[in-house]
Image: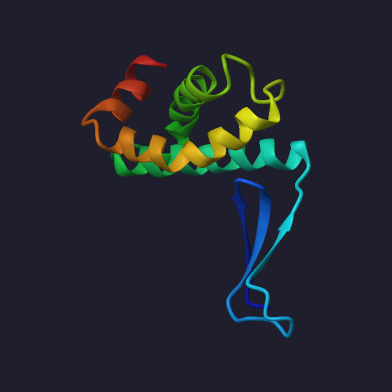
Length: 121
């Protein structure tokens, strides 16, 4: 392990070093392709769906129903109704920033995940 990680910030992907490198830089802003940004949103939504599903006491195999409901919500709230593949990059970046809040809000509503699983999106 080289002590680096990446995170998506307001100006693109940022490489974060756990210890300063020889140049004393704490991070470097790197541009990320649209495709990679969209895939990152999908991957994190899937992780969130699986975590919420298991936390609600359901088998992880039901995560597809929760993922579908979360994706519909993200499309409506952050992607101006567009699919992730057709949304503007600025909207995709905004959705990325909001994923933690989406997860927290869903967690905060008792029975919401069960409703997604039992009754669809």
